[in-house]
Length: 253
Image (cartoon, rainbow, N blue to C red; front, side):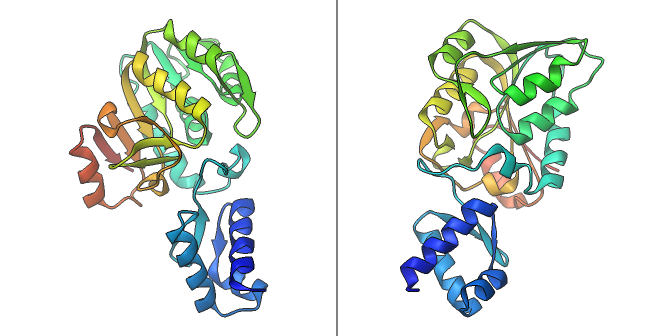
């Protein structure tokens, strides 16, 4: 196996499993840990993975996006903390948008059950969870359902959003950076998210630290468009401060 074939195999494993470990890769590929580290460094230079202490995880691109089921297996404790803190920013909002994705779904679960809310969402999973609440009115956006995320997109969803004025939107992204703003791999998803930003009075981004510094194919918002950012303490305080200088209040939990 030459270096190109080995890197392709490493990338395939990262995308299939959600993350890879240097020692396990070295054993599986029968090479040294240093060789694996060099391969990961090269893949990171190509924008295909991001390295962590002892491993790496795949970067989502126009050709690759993790499934919703994969997202439910990584950094779950951190995602729950972020979701709980984000839900506490509800304030006096009566209408709320909850984005597609696992962390937004956890936010939906953390919303106060005693509050009368109208929740707009593109996520079939989130709609199903909230529909059981007697105090919540759920509006599910129409459109084509994406199998990877079980969420609706395309002009039906965008047109429906155009008729709303939403008090508070909880949005996610595949990447957020000071240079490129909030990004996602799919243009259809980006169009829905961009419309959400347009029609919402307040916007909260909720995501774990691995989202920061990453960028994907389609930009749908600037950091300055956000009122608040909620993430975990894996994002250094110094970096959180740099994001706050662009406008949003940044909370690390």
